Image (cartoon, rainbow, N blue to C red; front, side, top):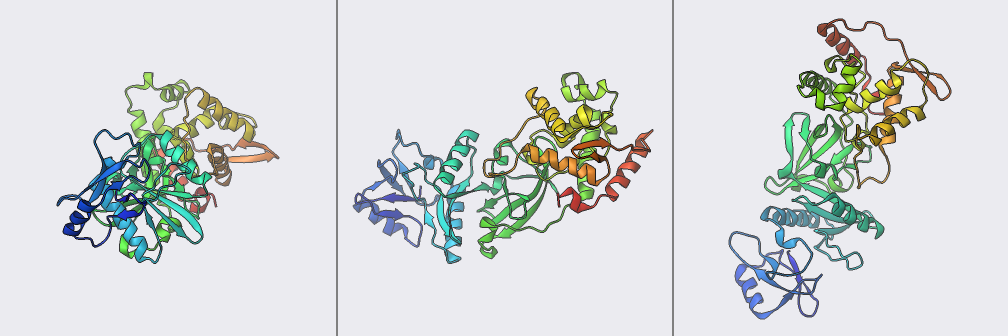
Length: 396
């Protein structure tokens, strides 16, 4: 940790222009204490690491600061210095006794009290949610910032996200999903936005890289990104997944593939209306190809009329039997998997895949030109995507 207290309760920060000899002399003449547990801490001064305070070995203090890496500490310092240069008054490692929490930085911006948590190691979802809820109950808005080094970019518009990293999801004012990230090595924000899950681990995403000292505070507090979506790239990624499912040799052990084959459906021949991006899909951990297929198999694709409640009921039944899994998004207070279902139904209506036959009742339209071979399917798919208006897919 970078902040400790003297015996009189005066905060001592190691951030600044202090020379090593000055710090060494100060260390000889003073004792330092953890602002939280009140235990005595040691000022450590070396040539390889940033000067910092550390608890004695065997300390019972529950805070995690001893495990902070050089990467974490240098990132926290850069963020603190950047906020100061932007004319704000950040506080480094403030301690909130009423909730027993100590974020990396606190700052007020446009009348809102923020707590910045720069997270460079994994913690449990339970702890992440607990900290988040404690801040919110104290009228403090938490901003969780992911370590840039943990980003696994796998293509121009593709990223691999772990379940832990999905906890960092928040919504920009535009409604688009964003994960805030910072790398002290490159001294840059690497924000991931327009996130749409493809599979459980892989997601479609755009990237915005901005050197920290060229960035405005809005990049953290109110991020804005252009409203664009690379539909052709999405189509290619979905096609790859459908093809790979057809080559899966473990179909007997895969409930989803068993369901498809029991209905004489080859995964590669799933129609283009299955696997569409909808904005609220991050609330569903299961691949959009899978959960949208289930809706077609259970309700939408069956002859006759159906209601929205029947679609939701079929979805919940799949959740009950673990065919579909829901994702927790603790940083967003509104929205749910139900929004994704409603949005998907609206997209199908806009694309004339489904039509409303009377108030509250819908029916799948009769689609001609079913593919009789793979090349025909690809042509149908190309024509389908060519005719999609981008704004319909983004829920506008």
